[in-house]
Length: 445
Ligand SMILES: NC(=O)c1ccc[n+]([C@@H]2O[C@H](COP(=O)([O-])OP(=O)(O)OC[C@H]3O[C@@H](n4cnc5c(N)ncnc54)[C@H](O)[C@@H]3O)[C@@H](O)[C@H]2O)c1
Ligand SMILES: O=c1ccn([C@@H]2O[C@H](COP(=O)(O)OP(=O)(O)O[C@H]3O[C@H](CO)[C@@H](O)[C@H](O)[C@H]3O)[C@@H](O)[C@H]2O)c(=O)[nH]1
Image 1 (cartoon, protein in one colour):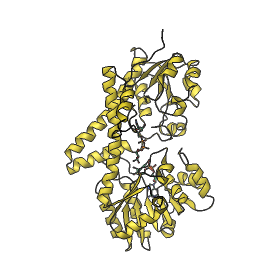
Image 2: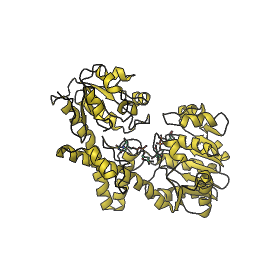
Image 3: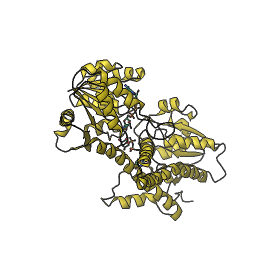
Image 4: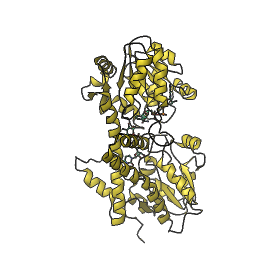
């Protein structure tokens, strides 16, 4: 099929590349000229596993190309994915829908033949009906709309798009359903992926409900970390033991400094606001509690760093601050709890020096207020305390790191706010280890 992907950010760029991998001819439309240029040169504008490989495979052949010209896409494609952003409004009261309504309003009058518009952006209850009105007002007859929410995780974007758990399609006509079956035919043909066809309102709720559940699970285990800290128990063991029950499971049960990123925080906020508008009071209360637990995690992490330096305050304390990305596997620092923790430590008078394996460029550009080190060794050099703030395997799984880091820091104190290291490796190398919701581990005197 000939398809377009309008908006080539964290969702759209991997989606466009994955659609080329499925055999489609793809044109990506991106407003930001710098992003568009980088993509057309065969590189991803951010770190995303497998994206560069697909761009290098398909851009030179012409099967995948990028442009800023919407008219080119309107003429070329029979199916248009809308993958533009839905950031939170500045007042936090729901999504800023400007990009979605703007993209559809601009595309609709350019369409000269029947085709399908497929919304992938995350939206709240009631949006699809409004998009449908824009199409009815501005496009020729025969333009169908499908809402096809996306469930990919950053860091796994290509893999999740090519091997999704399910495909959800909110459709209002048989034609629209046929188009979605055709575009995903290579995936559906494998027989192991369920296509869930429903009306648009249900598709909207499915996406918001999925992210709300994921956030709830993370806040639940983080609330248990608070319990364990007070009870002298070990939250890691609790998470493992309850997760063995297949009804609970282990995924999304890693305690830490809370969920961040470009999705869960804004999606929870926007959904809660919308639920309040429509009067879903019990759901509002539940999600407000989830958000409340999440906000408290950075406070708990600050307290743990204070405890690690002996309770005498953080003024002048030199911190090796490992991590800037909102999670491992991405260069994205949007709503990064790691950088929020760094900000709070600076506010308390400490001197964190931040290093991240992949997010240095993004972090420096978006948060120039922090002090950065290009290498891990530079960050560790002379540190009074080391804070592990993003769960990169380079920090948490490198068994050589405890010994090598021990030689350069001023004091062997590790505060692992992502609960990702095995404390035994660090204790053996002479470190004392603090983790949220776990007992402190120290070397034997
Ligand atoms: N990031 C994820 O992992 C993810 C996963 C699932 C769903 N989503 C949802 O997908 C949507 C996009 O998220 P994102 O993280 O990719 O955002 P993003 O900000 O990284 O990307 C959006 C892109 O759209 C471009 N754009 C805006 N208006 C445009 C227009 N009229 N024409 C062409 N390009 C335009 C912007 O320049 C930007 O590059 C959001 O609704 C988000 O909630 C994101
Ligand atoms: O056990 C866990 C799992 C995650 N996190 C944190 O939660 C946040 C979100 O992680 P993750 O869900 O992996 O990241 P995203 O890439 O933002 O993906 C989420 O948001 C996307 C956008 O809507 C959805 O498509 C995905 O299904 C959904 O997982 C990050 O800060 C993680 O560090 C934890 O603290 N503990």
